[in-house]
Length: 174
Image (cartoon, rainbow, N blue to C red):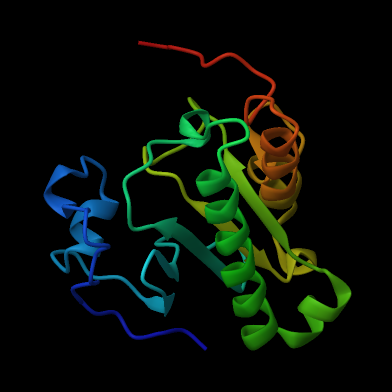
């Protein structure tokens, strides 16, 4: 179920230059750093988290550089469509890799909210089966609804309602 580790160039959308992506995901997309790719479309890439906290722990990222959830704009149809596409890719991964977790909805889809994120490039965590996760991660780091973690559905609902993606002001720690 785990894809092989490989350095593969992922074709970018026509107006995207991976060299301008300052995050660690830029070199992954450009094929300069290896990853374990699950799925890819013209606009998205899904790969295994380097430190998985569930049997399936994938990250779904846009190929276009978007720093974080604060960069998503209320009522922007492109941002909302992007989030829906990210969710759909995640659902397909869970369905393919852990069909029973898909049926039981035994998964977590979430974004970390800055400054509680580790990479400044929008990425949706896909974790399944959630019931097999260590409690510290399931009810701590990936606890949807906590100040540091929000669900993809909540972000989409807020954007569709014309509100900011998350109900918090961006914290600047440094």
